[in-house]
Image (tube, rainbow, N blue to C red; front, side):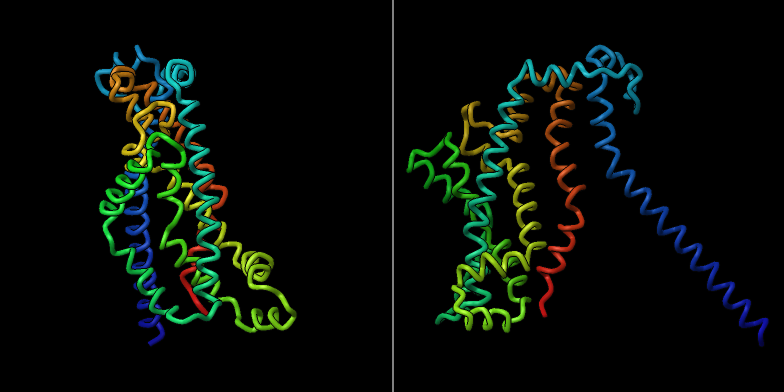
Length: 289
């Protein structure tokens, strides 16, 4: 009996080991598939124009690495202007989004007013509207207000988000109501409670929303491409597309890859630094109680 039990345990152990090897092998393969385009992009950015064109079969290493491509994208094309425009757009839009979303989420989570549940349901229903319809409406409105090729026209239509209000509202609702009632007994105003108590307590979710909005703005393409046709207001997304269409990217692929690397680095660093806060904030915003 003992020997049979021992053999069963060993069999189960071997099965678990084989299963784990299979799972991790698949994970490694999928990871390599995801990482490969980034690796090729980085390696290509360090290849000279001549070396790249001389390759019959693309190599996965740079035999003679050079930084001339990174110098070229800042001297031959206005990449610095695109990055500055994107920083202005991302920071301004994110700040305005927080000013709008935090009070809205606080009102839905803590304030009592007639029709709150119906209004919040209708508010969430906006998520069902296709983004193409919203873009068309915003484009017509911005055009009629003569706000094309302006930062105001870029920022205002992107300053609100139903999803971020929902995420903040769920996080605010998780704070015990007794804390709010105690603050009201002490004479604390709703605005002061929101700024001094609620926002610091829900800091992980606020940080998460901020980072997600920054990443969303940095990666924005359709709206900036639609509303701007002057180079002075190009963001990195439509700026890179303009470089490709102008022939620079098609002719000098290594330089184009260098530009993409420069644009991608800030987002990668931002995610690596705050990845723990992002996961914590999303988990907290998605749970209640």
